[in-house]
Image 1 (cartoon, rainbow, N blue to C red):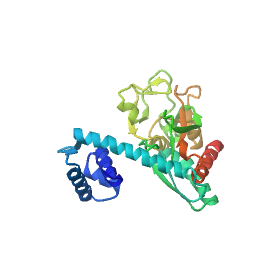
Image 2: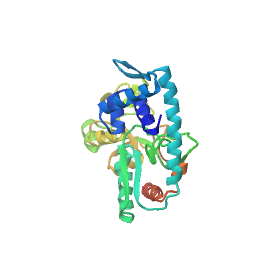
Image 3: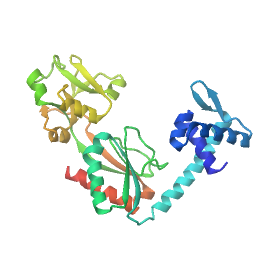
Image 4: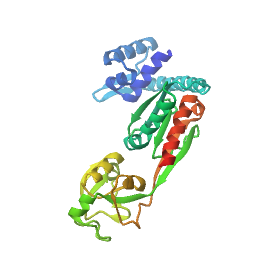
Length: 289
């Protein structure tokens, strides 16, 4: 099996559908299907079970998949080590972060990079999905979760208290909530992944059992936008709430867990000139905040 075949096997093994694999490989579904059939004929083994829900690896397919992953790791390491010696301030840098952090911090950093090094091209992926730096799905990740992979270089960019905010328009209409009332008579904006975990909603340590959730959203940007639009009370990082001109509720209270932002890159790539240039500007933008 050559590397091109391995890439097809890996893509289908991970996506489990022809459409998903085709999207990763930037080809059409029919091409993926033909390539898998050709690989199976060459190996003399059935690698995938075709089911109503997708393509599932057989026992032989799992063995081939593990071998393909080893090939991928070796190829990726070769690229990382080679790029780690690159001193040119040109070329592509792939950055992944959330939409919330992209708008306020990463895009301003990209603008600064472009002003100084116009031949550096940043490919920015705004998503809550955690891309794999070890497989070079991204060169730099800016996230709110700290990874524990020893091959990754991790730096904390900021640490903000999480506080309760509302718009002035909301408070003019509903008044201030009273502590100890579990937000009775008030509308709330909730972070939907928190609710999906089945935990009882609390805001800055106050039970929200008597409040009315009017919006459950799946990103910090959407919480920020909903609170700013006057939909209800919601938790936001202190810096962002104040920056947006929102009113802080119960200034003596904050969530027990702060909002932390981490920048992550692979050890082999941290000295690459173009990646270093992006890192430096991102650090500077957060430091100014």
